[in-house]
Each structure stands twice: as C-alpha cells, then as structure tokens.
Length: 405
Image (cartoon, rainbow, N blue to C red; front, side, top):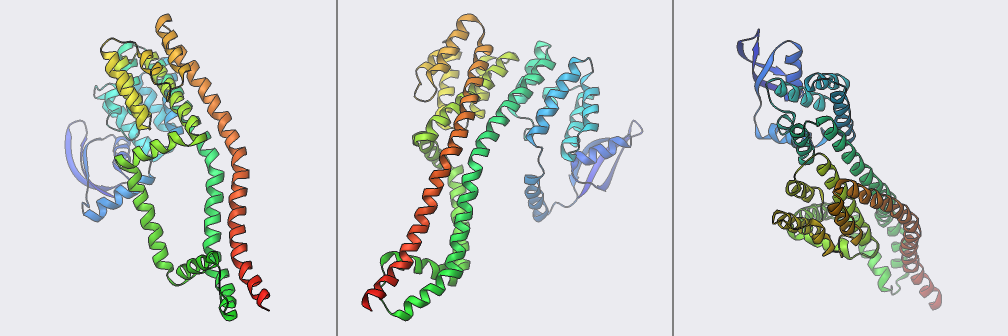
C-alpha cells in the first residue's frame, strides 16, 4: 500500500514523500529504523474501493489475544525488574513477530518518548487495548504500582481467555457434526434422492406426505440450487443483522436465560467474568464506579448489564454494592452477593471476588465437560431421527406397491 507521509529527518528537517508499506505502523517502524520520525501518513490511493478493501483486510489483520496477554505480563515483569517503560517496549518490539502489533508497540513507545503516559498512548489503539486494559494501566500509574497492575490485567485477560476457550471447545464438536449433517443431507437431496424419485414416478403410486416433502426439497435443491444458495446467504445475513440489533440481542439474551442447561451455565459464566474483572480493577486501584462501568462492557448479556448499571447508580449514592447482587439472585447466584458482603465488611473485596471467580470458572469447566458427554447421545438421537424419517419416507411407497401386487 502506498502512503503519502510527512516525517522529520536530521533532527529538524521536515519533508513529504510517498512510500509503500504494509500499514501505518510498519511505515513508522521503517522510518524509525532509518533514524527518522513519522509526523503523519495518509493512503495515497483514497478511492472508495481501496478504502473498503482496507477495512475488509483489517478484519483478518488482528492482534491475537494470547499475544496481548504475553505483552501485558512481560511489560509488567520488565518494569518490576527496573527497566524504564520505553526500554521495556523496545525489547518487546524486537521479540514480537506480528507486524501489526510490532508497529503499534513502536508507535506507543514513540508517544511515551514525547511525554505521554502509557495509558494515554494505549488509548490510540482501542481495538487492541481494551477499556479494561487502559483503566488498569492508568490506575497503576496513579498508584505508583504499574508493574502490579499490568500483571493483574494479564492474569485477568488470561482467565477470561481460558474460560472462552473452554466454552468454545465444548461447542465445537456439536457444531461440526450439525454442519456435516446439513451438507450430507443437501448432497443426498441433489444426487441420491432424484434416482429414487424416478422409480416412484415410474410406479405411478400414491406417495405419503413425508415422501412428498423430501421430493419437493430434492427438486428445489436440484433445479433451483442458485436460489437455494441465495436464500441460505440471505437468511444468514438477516440472522446476523438481527442478532446485532437491540431487539435481536434482547431476544437471544432472553432465550439463553430460559434454556434449561444453558441458563445456569450463562449465569455462572457472567458471574465469573464479573467477579474476576472487578477483583482485578479494584486490586489495581480503579474507583468502584468506574470499575462497574467497565464490567458492563465486559459482560455481554443485557439483563446482567442492567444490574451493573443499577449497582453503579447505587454505589454513587453511597449504598453497598452487595445489596444489588443479593436482590438479583435469579441472575447472579447468591454466593456472589454474600462474598461481596463479606468483602465489604472485612475490607478484602478483591480477594473475595477472586475466590468467587475461581469457584465459578471451575464449575463452568466441569459443566462444559459434562455437556460434551451429554451432547453425544443427543446428537445420536437427532441423527437417528433424521435417518429414520428419510428411511420411512423412502420405504413406505415401496411397501404400498408391494401390497398392490
């Protein structure tokens, strides 16, 4: 990609030029290695197509979560060992392989050399460094314990990442099986069923309703496959947009909280996230009201968000936060409210919250394992039902013909 940029060389010589580079961060790194300082850069090609393509490509050019976790922990360890923030960032920049992340760290380091604080420098990259990360870094700077705050945010991100990985792993197996079933079913409708249908039509016999349904589906997929593909794509897009809308989010939030097994799992997941995040923020010295606001962005379900908004309003009035959770035990388990109450009385809120987080994370881990065990027989029943429906639909007409003979 070509960039039109302005830079400083030889200390005070400002010049403009055009240069090819992967992105702005890479351009900044390249100029820095040549002893120059980037002032500004804009893409030389500003056509709508080029801009759209860049936005699309940025979806795939991301910084993985595990790299951000390692960055937070290593930066905290280096600062604790006595290195300056700028020196620690320079070391990390050399170690990181991801070009985008390397460029971001280089830019953050440049901002720090210009006099910015670490938290202010990180604010320029909200897609990489979350509000939680920035708030904990800022709290660490204000308290003089930045190294500990970075370690805390690293631990918090790691705990959340592991929790998501366990849930994703539990859902992977059934998702793959269902997708394979769908693909096999469509292929059978296109290539296998038409041959059987031809035989039925030659026999000129009356077909049951189930067989007619399969015949209609087969004809549709065989003769209108482009329309079928278009319908699937449109439904996927509509479903995605609906899920992003306020009504859609509320619908799925309600659905999740009413499903028999998923409901309890969702409550424990949100409890674990709330407890771990609040513990990390309070440990780093983030004010209570600000911490609750940040947690509202970490928790996804709107029902839990509403409770946290209520908690923020009541904390600002001077009320105890435990009262809010104890009044909403249908969503947040009573154990969380009681432990917060103990933390308020003993002054050990972060420790109590971390105990709650670990408890529910272990519970979620066990339940996801149990779900994997339960899902297998459920999938077998679904597969059996689908195969049975197909077999009955195909065999019934044959018996009808045999009876007439």
